[in-house]
Length: 364
Image 1 (cartoon, one colour):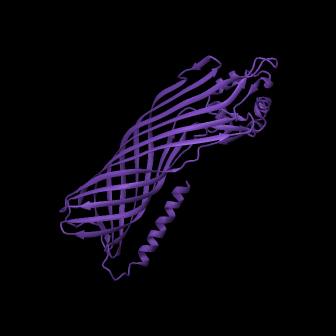
Image 2 (spheres, rainbow, N blue to C red):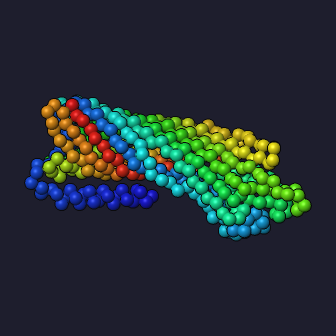
Image 3 (spheres, rainbow, N blue to C red):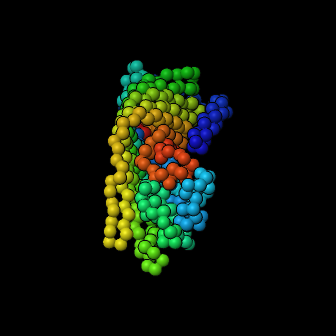
């Protein structure tokens, strides 16, 4: 939501700047409604941050397993207070977008086709000085089977946890639009189109230092705990939007746009926990679903472009800030303990992407 608020603020700044420079002595560069080019080829470098909700992978306990067991069956708030939830620290990474526009210079109708790819891998890690790491990503049934609600002195939770999240984003857009003037130095391009998305996510979480023993007279033995979660989404649906351009003179223009889509497709979610004690391993596909869902998404941007004309071709270069939001995108199952410690929230999370774009286009 912070990214969306930032975008709205920038829209108002863009409108203010347009009024400030409207008296520029250079003739404004208008939107390319009447220009004679018929083909535009463009590419964009993306420097984005991806934020996926419901990716918590560990809980740091206040007092270890003994304190947690004491609170089971007690007041709900007391149980929540027993752990601090740990989430990944989402970093910035690079991606790209390529596309082309075919335009009928007589009618100003155009066809825009683009492909966006963003491949991202985020590794996160947390550790404690004692056995305080609760494996949130492991199903609750496995955790309580492990502790067996027995003598807590025979149980040691982990000292370290790691999360390896792979995010692969592929989106294709095809739109049909027509440019028009609102006044002399402001133009817009409403459009309709089709959006296709295939977004693949995989999270591999490991917990280190878990131990158990049969009694106080026997030594602790290590317990291997890890889990794989997959959330693969493939969908297609209609889109609608508008692009805007404010000419401010000397080849420069302020640009903005907003679009929305409603895509329908299949989400393949899967959960594979693994718990091993000594030479005995248990690894099963505990949860797998192929769900069909209708999901909304919005996209907005604001930027600055420069347009130049040369012998036989034109060049457009610029920068922009873009925000995307996908509702209810993460559907991989969450453990019962994870849901409790996050205040009863369901394991469904929104996906947000935002960042800077640097683009260049050549017109013929």
